[in-house]
Length: 103
Image 1 (tube, helix red, strand yellow):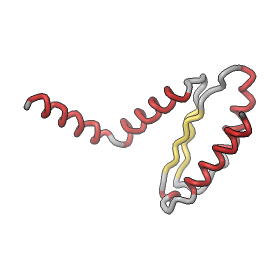
Image 2 (cartoon, helix red, strand yellow; image 1 turned 45 degrees about the horizontal axis):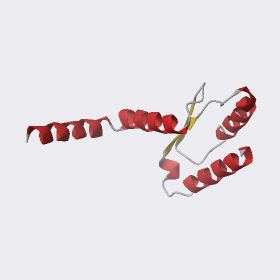
Image 3 (cartoon, one colour; image 1 turned 180 degrees about the vertical axis):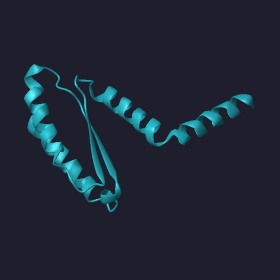
């Protein structure tokens, strides 16, 4: 399983780097914490690899101290990104919902 995860990670990062705009893009990676104490060294090894990733405008690694699980990590990560980088979009959607309720 660990080898598969690492292989998939490297492959996906390779695909992202091939994007024409990769060097202009900010890459944000959410690294979940270890599921248990035995997985701690594997998480550290993956994070060490992540710090070597290049080819992007910037790299930000969010290192979770505990294991959030896939679903929570995705939902919280996307929510954080949208709030930080697209606050106007949230405001527009909010106004559309208010207008729809008034009709």
